[in-house]
Length: 288
Image 1 (cartoon, rainbow, N blue to C red):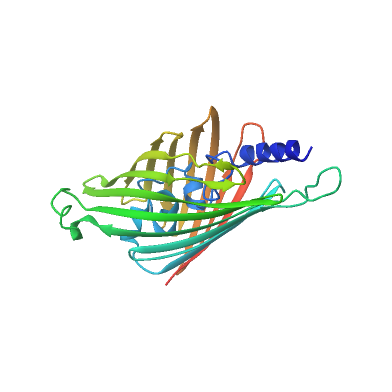
Image 2: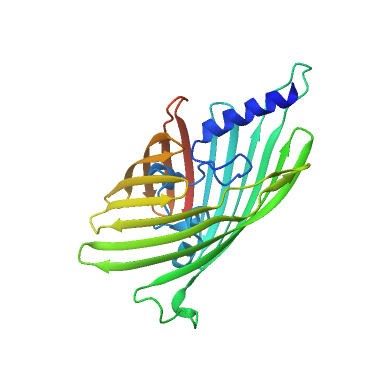
């Protein structure tokens, strides 16, 4: 009975996240609020600490020290938190997901929780001797090392994975054009008892267009999903966003809003699901 209930719990979590590859991966539950508002298409945008999740090469172009946090509760089923910081060339973040209030017929608690830590860096390719003359436009490379620990009932395990990213940008008369490439979750997931809870390695290609007027268009094509997003920064202090994501035969629409005031930022994303209630994401950030 306990095993059956755990499988039901896993199914609910998988449906609620909708944007993820597997339950054992705490980084795949929609942590980046701005990215989620754009349908999750962020491989070529990769700005701020969200580059740790989408493309670590973006850390090379972080302009200053900044910090971000996200806290959300999905369907009153699980709570997930994200705290991250970045400075030019470097970034780090941690996440925690927990499920409570579920018990088997004997009233024994059925716990499920994950903890994740990611460390990343990005570097301008022109500073690497064998890459300095390879690209005709500004290009950055990046790496991110991920560690996670998972606990299910009375079993626990841990694992590591590596993200590798490439990001280029080009200024044109019509705005800035970016292209990104990321290999995510290169490695293995946690070993839980005698079973491996492996992660699915994902190869993603991304494109972005940023117009001086504030218009923004992004596209992600990966082995797991297709995502398209549009945004418009009004008065440089308010950004409205929208996106759509196709994954595993499901279509998920999203809306987002970002407000900037001096050094502070507040972000919101609304994510729909074909057969579950919408979920809400809130993020808070500060730049120094």
